[in-house]
Length: 75
Image 1: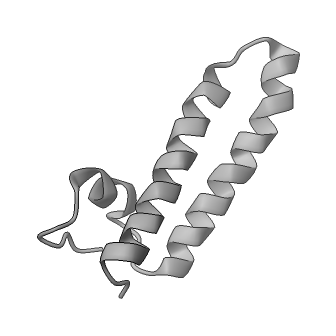
Image 2 (image 1 turned 60 degrees about the vertical axis):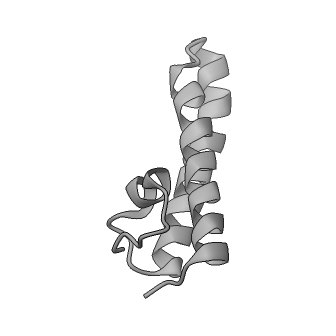
């Protein structure tokens, strides 16, 4: 994705190598699936590092996807 003039840096960094909306959705759903897998694993291992990292990253992808849908266009 090419950075548009009105695109915030956080959106560009999240989606810079993604060209299509389908690719962005695949990234989001894979990220969400991994986040959900981290819940029982984190509980079992008593190590919340992965879950604590994946929740903000998944939200970042989701909000970036929504920003592009609302303010820009996909290739």
